[in-house]
Length: 379
Image 1 (cartoon, one colour):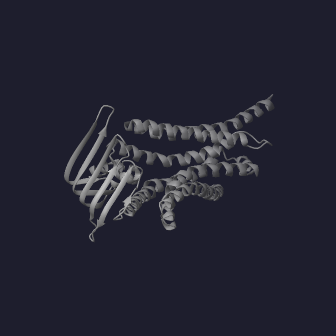
Image 2 (image 1 turned 180 degrees about the horizontal axis):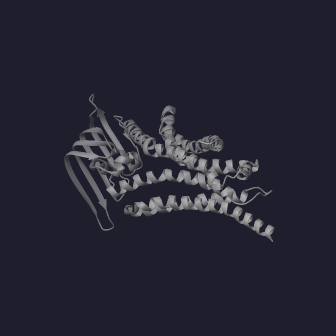
Image 3 (image 1 turned 120 degrees about the vertical axis):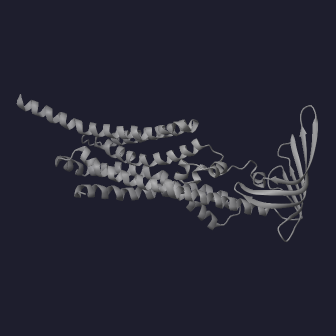
């Protein structure tokens, strides 16, 4: 690599490290504060809070890196322009296309980092986070399984256990679910077991009865059902709603491209949804070199001004916003129709065309001025 390329690349990497550190810290702290409040309110320790915040870090970094790449190239180009380094490089015969080469290398480097995150670290962290959340849900559930006292784990829920056997069996269980006044149910059973499923803790009621009182404007009806075995989603009882299955984002990209029956059963998604998620991951790293090139190419447009390059900076930010808007619009469109997954790559193509247009505009005026000067001398 030529020395001038190494110099520009070293400047960009230094600035990228600074902006990435600042943006990741701000974004991570913002997420950690809300997570800190939620976990501490549930009675968790500081170590659990630290573990959960660490597991969210790969996702935060993957979101922040393209923005940090844009900020590094825009600030680096501004500084080199202010110190007349870009002027000296262009006077030495380096065109905007040639100056953009180390920037493109820098953008590809950031894109590789994002690819490693979205294809490897983020799914692993999300899968581990889902496991830990299931474990914590189990722990929270066990806090309400205390014998001899009435418990109220959620509004409209009453729970009573006469005793807990040495092998973990719950003896003489009573549950009243009155969250819906027009549809109340009482469950009683001689024994019950708490088992851990993929969707959270489930209560298995043995040798019991359910009494459902349904009330309408015209009449009331009571339905009594006796059962030998009945499963009750105690996790939904504690959270006040039905629990969902695993998320597609918890799985690796290769498995999403060719989803198997176990993955589809665990997530409740279709094969088209799984492939859509995989293509979203593949398209995401492509935006990093686009963001870097927009931040650099826009600041090459226009000549020197004592008022600075704030106009070019605003145009660069606007260009990045447009590309991000197209990315979100494509994701929303493919979310409604997963068969349109090629649309996910359209923002990257438009961004690449925008970068080429900016470089062409940056190089065009110099040739025009040079031609005008030659015409005036001949006259």
